[in-house]
Amino acid sequence: MNIYKYIKILLVFCLLLPACKKSEEVFHERGYPKSPAGVVNINRATLEELMRLPLINEQKAKLIIEWRKNHPFKSVEEIILVPQIGEYTYLQLRKYAVVKGKTTLKKKILYRKRKKGD
Image 1 (cartoon, rainbow, N blue to C red):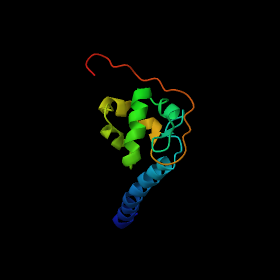
Image 2: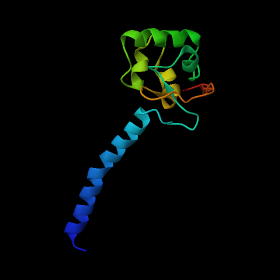
Image 3: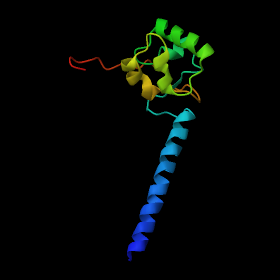
Image 4: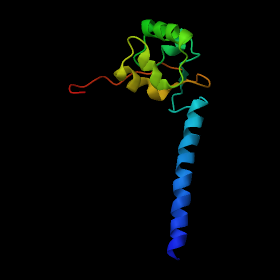
C-alpha cells in the first residue's frame, strides 16, 4: 500500500470519530438509559421520580421543580445552578439524569459515601 491510502484511511477515521460521539449524545438525549438502572428526565419528572436520583431528597426535588419552571434545563450540568445542588451531588446523579426523553428509573439509587480525602 502506498502512503496516500494510509492517509485516506486516517482522514476518514478522523472525520467519522466526531460523528460517533454526536450519535452517542443524541442517544442519551432521547432518554435511553445511560446506565442499566435507567434515567430520570429532570425537566419533566415528578417529585417522587426526582427523589430516585442519588442525594436528592424531598427538599432538593422541590427546589429542582421550582427552578425548572423558569429555567428549563438544556443540559444535565445546569442542575448545579439549583440552590443546594453542588458539584458532588451532580457527579453522583449525572449518569442517571437526562433533559429529554422518558423517565425509566424505577428504584432509588444509593450514592457512594465520601471517603476521607475526597
